[in-house]
Image (cartoon, rainbow, N blue to C red):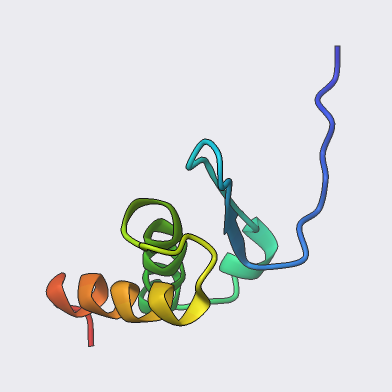
Length: 73
């Protein structure tokens, strides 16, 4: 039995129903660790912190709070 592999067109995404995050190995391999963390914080925020789950600006602001709170530059 083989797994179905679907390429994603964004560096990362999160399921609106389960909170499961998918990350593009190809995209992330070309990024710095701080860039990766900023994206992970953004996706995390969509599911776990946003009042309006699909709001990109809210996810950016919540991600920034997380990112800076962890001591990233």
